[in-house]
Image (cartoon, rainbow, N blue to C red; front, side, top):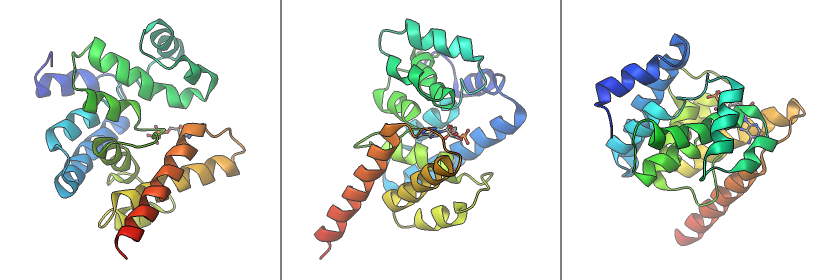
Length: 197
Ligand SMILES: Nc1ncnc2c1ncn2[C@@H]1O[C@H](COP(=O)(O)OP(=O)(O)O)[C@@H](O)[C@H]1O
């Protein structure tokens, strides 16, 4: 890491409006709690949470340039909704500008919006914290918070289902990885329930 936590917070908070920074503070708090509850590393959860939306308010062209110029980015993402780009850009700049080297942290930033198949424990913690931090208010958020008290996977499926349902009502294109991620979690839950028989 290039900066102290305090300095990192100062730099990242300066790149977004106050409201989005309040959301980030909520994600930091919730991600740390979830990490402690489910056995992920709370320090890594906190760092990924600080950086997860770092690029959210970057100009679209700057996000596009970063994705196009990076040797490690998924260029196919540029064919999909711009709203998805900030996670990939966050993943790239976390290493490039802030010298974050931990691949678990980098991946949790990268997959926090779309999810992916076989999400790591830290991916799940950060993605779920993004859905349910205290400042979130959307239909179904309380159900997600309740499910999170006993299962990361149950809560995340409810989170992805709410995103997918909203996109359906808006007749938007669904990024396929989110569907794969959701199905994979449902599969994990099936296996867990068979194990418990
Ligand atoms: N799987 C997806 N496919 C297409 N668009 C998506 C998908 N997931 C999220 N989005 C879009 O990206 C936006 C931002 O997602 P996210 O970063 O999780 O939310 P927020 O801005 O509320 O933190 C969503 O409101 C939605 O419009």
